[in-house]
Length: 135
Image 1 (cartoon, rainbow, N blue to C red):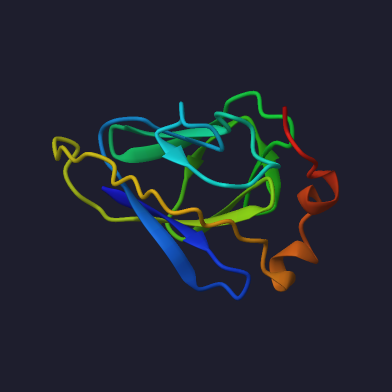
Image 2: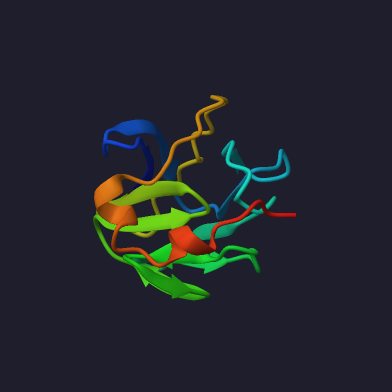
């Protein structure tokens, strides 16, 4: 099991979702499993899923890209305590080592939270200048 945390501008956790054996799509549209209110996110921006003992992230052909620890990615394996930036939203991925057979469902919050990227991260991340409203 793992958690994906939505971070505020000062780096505090605003929301948290569990990611288990079922893939979870994040985006700004209601068709995503988790809806984030950020107009620079695509409707379905990225997907996180479990494969064996690892968790992977895949950009779903978003306009502004998905960034993992400051590097743009199409698909990659996530590590514990890695930062994920999508649009103007910053997340922290945290992994909890459990057997692959553990089954959990994602926790979906219905908050209208929209946050910006913390200044310390934004200063070093090239994606901030590229973020524009998505289709």
